[in-house]
Every structure is written in structure tokens, then in C-alpha cells.
Amino acid sequence: MASALVVIVVLCLGLFAWRVMAQRQRIVRPHPQSPAWHNGRFRNVANTRAASLGEVRKAFRAHRGQRRKPQSPLPLVTVRQDVLSGPPSQALQVTWLGHSSVLIEIDGLRLLTDPVLGARASPVPFAGPKRFTPPALTVAQLPPIDAVILSHDHYDHLDRDTIRALADRVGHFYTTLGVGQRLIAWGVDAKRVTELDWWQETRFGPLTLAATPAQHFSGRGLRDGNSTLWASWVVLGTHERLFFSGDTGMHEGFAQIGERYGPFDLTLIECGAYSETWPNVHMQPEQSIAAHRLVCGKTMMPVHWGTFDLAFHRWDEPAERIRALAAEQGVHLVQPRPGETVGPDTALQSPWWRAFEAEAVEHPSLNLSRETGA
Image: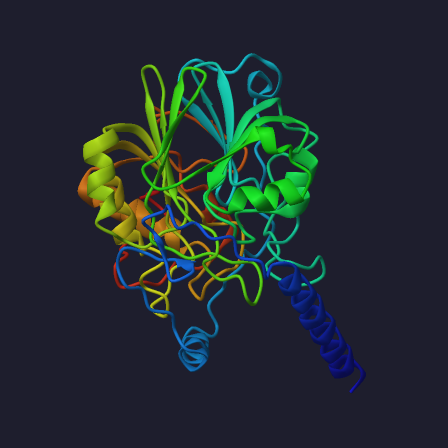
């Protein structure tokens, strides 16, 4: 009885904190100049459908028993010293910090995507999705960052405490319409914030940065849904190109991005947190591979997996499925450990996550041998 009472009290406190934060997020700034702005909110080009609470409950019951967290904390690779203290690489290379947080080096600059370096992806510190393992780098351990790129404002992509800690340590913040106001409210100098609409470009030193379409949604409270824009991002260097999908479902804009900005030497494509209950706003691994090919990618690095429990599938299923599909379709894949640095020409790593699970992943699309390392 006492333990049940504790659970009820914690849930009530969490609901209260959520409502307080929702009150703070009520103001919706209009963006009538954006083609994605309709009737007071941002909208996707295609219609998207959200599952009902009943459908979510049904999916949860159907997937009960899935291991959605690893049996033990995942290992951290010690980030290379040249990445931490040397000059930024001229050649394109990236270091995975976990989930969608990636340290990018290109043309002598360091960029950081969707930095979430806290313990939870949540509006409150005591509840919500908790990391499987610490981030590969804390804010204090990060090397100097020239720019942060933000895809949207969900808690697993935009962390207030991380942004506050970075506010005076980053040269510039690039994000989507509406999200910049959140950064400014958290202490980032407005002069160092640039908001872009879909298909808008800006110059940053030798780089061209472009916000490109995605199919998703936004919001951090109960009443601010779709009041800010979501996007994918293009980084065009003097010799190499990178595409970052952000969170997205499959959409026709991928082909347009490939035609306008491809080919890309490296793509950072989401491949986790998918479900049949939200098929339009996240991609199944088959769609992730298709998106990589549509944008004309050379090497694909899957992100948005292996860090938080955000869906019903087994935690390592995205890595297994994407690996099998890449092998079948001849796609060059890199799957680094958290903290590992890779480039477009890096060879495919061994399936390192298998050491933390005794059982094979059971999925009808997989026929993998753990002995052969397929």
C-alpha cells in the first residue's frame, strides 16, 4: 500500500510540473510568412495521423515482454584526444554522443546537432525516459563548438539545461521558426540565434546551412503543439556534404532534397522510436534506408536509437534491422559506439551492441548469425 501511495504521489507531482510548464508555453507566435503555417499552427505537407490513447495501450500490450533497455549500461568509447583538444578537422568526420547528438567536424569548424546531454529526455528531473548510458561527453568536456544545429523542440532533441550550459560557449545557434524564442528565453543572446524556414539557407564561414522539410510535429507543453517548426538540415562544405534528418516520417521531400543538395558524403538518419501507432512521423528502418538513397547519400550513420526508451520495439532492433537492410541493398553503413569518431570512408564496425544481449533479436525481416557477425 505504501509503495502504491508513493507512485501516486510521484505521478501527481509530475502532472503538476507538466501543467506548470505547459502554462509557460501557451504563447504561440504567428509565422504567416511560412508556407508551412496554416490556421495558427505549423502543418506537414502530407496529412499525418496520431494514434488514439486506446491504440497506444493496445500496442503496449502487444509488445509487452520486449526488452526495451539493455541488460547493462552500454560502453563509452573514450573520445579521441585530437577531437577534444586539437584543431577541428578539415575533412568531414563525426562523433556520436548518443541519440541524435552528433559532433560534426568539417572545414575547420565544429557543429553539434540536437545536444541532449542530461540524464533524462523529460520536462522533469525525476521521471520520463532515462538514458541507457551517460552521454559520451558532458557539456564541460566538449571542445569549443562553433555552432549548434537544432531540428525541433521535443525533449529528446532540445534540453533546456544543456542549452543553458552551452549558452555562452557556442558561437551561434541555428534552428527552426519559433524554437529560437525558446533559446533566447533560456539565456542565449538573440544576436547568436538564427531561425530558418524550410528551404531557407544561410552562410556560416565556409559552410552553407539549409533547413529542409521533415514530416513530424512539435511541442513541449499541453497547449503549444505545432507552434514551432521542425526540419531536417543540410551542411554544405567546400568539398563534402552532410544531411541530418532530424525526426521525420517518410515524405516526398527527400527526393527534392537529393535533387537540390545531393549527393551527400554522409547522412545522419533516424532509425529508432518507430511504431505502427505513429507511422507518419517516424520511419521504419526500411524507410530510413530509402530516405538515405533518395537524398543521394554515400555513407549512412543511423541515429536516434540506443539511448532512450521511446517506443515499443526492442532497444537493439533498429541497429539489427538497418544492418541487415544495408547489406541486402549495398548501402555503406557506419554504426559507431557512443564516443567513436567516423567519416564517410570508415569501414563498417562490428555489431558491438550484441555483447550486451544473450538472445537474438526476433523479427521476421531478420536472419542474422551472431557467430558470423553479420
